[in-house]
Structures are given as C-alpha cells and as structure tokens.
Image (tube, rainbow, N blue to C red; front, side):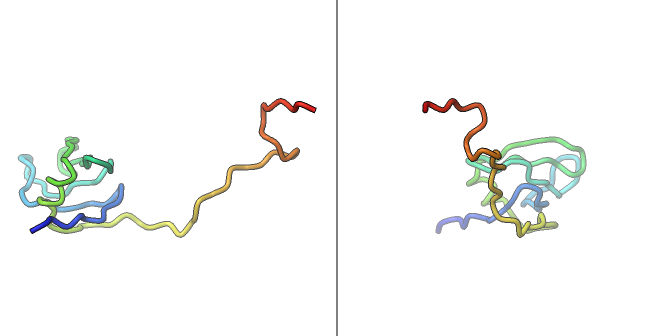
Length: 90
C-alpha cells in the first residue's frame, strides 16, 4: 500500500508519530524538497527527514502557514523598454 504524499508548506507546524527526546511533539517545516527540513519547537534542534520517512511519520497539522493570494510578480521594467546594462547594436 503506497504512502500518500502530504501537502506541506514552509512555515507549517506538524505533529509526527513520536515526540522528540526533549519531550516536544511540534515541528516547524523549514525546507521542502527531496528531504524535509524540520525544527523542533521545544528545543530548536534542526533535523532533516527523507520525504518518504516524513510522510510515514506524519500525524497531523498543528498550524498551517497562511496562503497568500498574490500571483507571480513581474520584474520592474526600465523606462527605455530594454534591459539594464545591455548594449544596443544599431
């Protein structure tokens, strides 16, 4: 039976299967990718788990990071309409 991928974002606070040795069971997500970066909310210890191990140990959300409604922003354009620092060959 496959393990479902948990949709997490940086800033989410999650609960895992077992508590940290300091006694806390709240982890803040600090990095996403092939491995998940977590920071213990009790002692501040930073750890990384492989994505598969994180998905197996995940038990629920404590807090979820706010979703911003802003779309991608365009870079500011220059007044001439060209790139800054470019050379015109005319």
